[in-house]
Every structure is written in structure tokens, then in C-alpha cells.
Image (cartoon, rainbow, N blue to C red; front, top):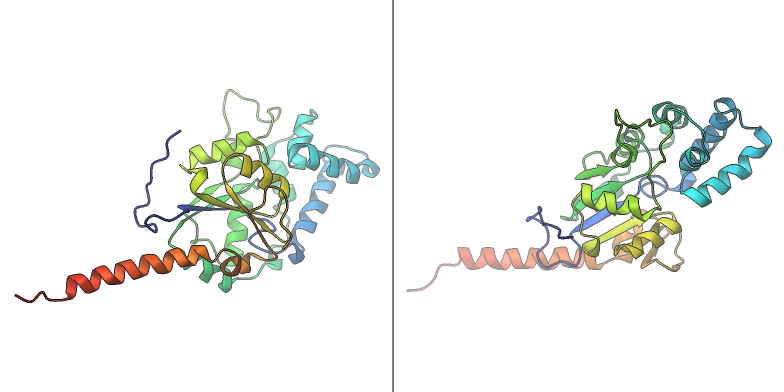
Length: 260
């Protein structure tokens, strides 16, 4: 597959032409408590909407997440029928988004890099938009790949019964590359899930683990926090500085009069 470069303003001759970001527990820390509330809502949905025995839910959630990437995908694979929008409304729609505060540090870091930035999340569009808005990052990204992108509604498919496409399946990554015109060999991917990163590595992406400083198989960089990007991947800013030096030199050459 060939990938066209639609972003001529990017850093010339840079190693990366795109930065690909997960959202939850990546752009904000797990310690915020939002993910714990999400897990609670998922368990409540399984008990209250799918009539699954409460005592079985905790272990079931762990196993489904392990086997299918998300509990939602696992439930569908096991044959449970439910409306996707209703599920997301129950699980994400009731989250205490006030846990998240504006993050001017991350905003400044992202805006200091003239490299294309894309969101790649298993969550639904409304949740991604709410999180980005709460963090003050809503205008920092060029494209968003989310649940609806990978699982579009179709009149010919019963969405309540169809299998769900999501990370860490390689198919999800390949669909994202096609949708956002991403060359994986020139893209750096940020995620908190080691399984997602290991699949990403197989597709050609360079990878950054968020939430731990311990590198593991399939991980190129490991950061305790997304705020540590500059220290962990200084080459991104080195490329920016080199590009600025070239532009300044070119400007000086143009503005300097030539003696006759």
C-alpha cells in the first residue's frame, strides 16, 4: 500500500510524519479515577441490562477484556445482543467528566510539534470529544478514529449482532491506517495498553507505552506520563529545531542583499 503525504507543512525529511494517540489513560492519567468509574458502569450494564449474574461479572470482565480487547467486544462475541449507542450511553454517558481538568502543559507540548496528530480510540465519538474538551485539547488533533469509525452503521447489517472491531486486533489498525491515510512506518503510536502496542509494533508502528517507565516487548519508549514526551523522545524536538534552523538560514539568504 502506498501512502500519500497530504501535509507538506510537516518537518522535511523527519523520521515521523504522524503521531497516533490513544485517549483513555494515555492523554490523562489512570489516577484520575475516570477509568475506574467506567469499569463500574460496564459491570452495572452487564447486571442490569444483560441479566448476567452479579457474582460472575468481575471475573468475566477481566477475561473478556483479555480475550477480545474490550468487554463490549467480548460480550458481542459471546452472543449478547444490545444496541451500541445504548451501551455507550450507559457506560460513558454517566461518567464524572469533572474528574478531568484542562492540561495546558500537554496542550503546549502537542502544539509545539508541527507533525500531524491523530486520535485512535476504542471509545465512542461522544466520549472522545468530551475528554478532549475537558482537557482543553479539542483543537490539537487533525483526525479522530473511534468506535463509530471502525464500526459504522449499515442498513444491511444488524449492528446488535455483528462483531465489534477494536484494538488490539490488527484489522482495527489496518482500517485506521486506511481511513486516516497513515503510513505506519513513519508514525509513532502512544497507548497505555501493552497488548495494543504489541499489535501496533507488528503493523510497523514505533510505540510509546504511557503509564510505566519499564520497557517491555513491543515497546520502543516507556513514559510514566504523557508529559514526559520531550525527555523520552527528544528527537521529535530536535527535528523541529533543525527545520527551524533551515528556514532561518533560507530567510537570511533571501533577505541578504547580493553585492554587485
